[in-house]
Figure 1 (cartoon, rainbow, N blue to C red):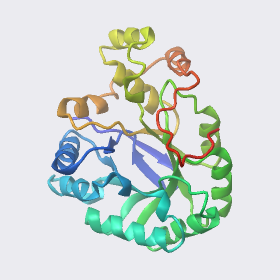
Figure 2 (figure 1 turned 135 degrees about the vertical axis):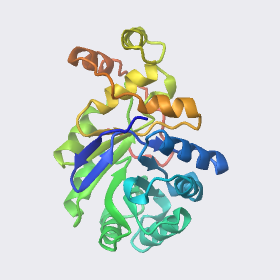
Figure 3 (figure 1 turned 60 degrees about the vertical axis):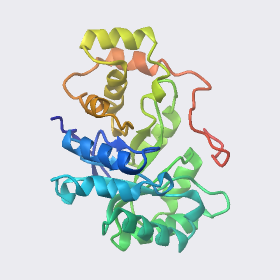
Length: 276
């Protein structure tokens, strides 16, 4: 069984690989969470929007691992981030999870109709109330990140965004690092878009791994970086965390980063901000 090392940040210690649960539904979600924990995962990522918090909680309770040994992240949907609404949404998430706190609460997406001062103030109130041990944001731009950190009265510990070898996020990653924030990559293997790349195939052959494992190793080998690959398949769940028994060279890390190309963003809903 593989246990992921923890990444240390501003008021946060988080396992470098977590289970993403977007589009994992019902009992399938609960089973995936249980399989993941039994396979060594100690970090589970969910969100109110996913509609599966109840089943994430169910999967956690089906294991023998203590809640104190797990790191659970959830997110407040962009329609619910005004002061008052955000706190109520956080409490609703905890009821669905059947927990008294989460380890990390994120604003899932910014909302141009809600002043950032209002949502960041509400997020900080949630932390002070003990509903979340740490707080952060997701899908923010560089300018939003700067403003949020200027407004926050509690540490913003995490930025979660799409990131994979095809998508250059160097500007945003530098902004997060400037503010002492860790980074969580969602869609960390890019839905397999680059698996056919000769470089990834060659590295997979060299290390006896899959292209997905090469990408996940590239993710977690970067400073302050966490990845949350999603799967509901037991074999893939085990495979995704088995990336701590080898390391890419500096040259190989640069080569994988060099796969980035314009137009490779996979997640950009109509309410998304103007990306950097």
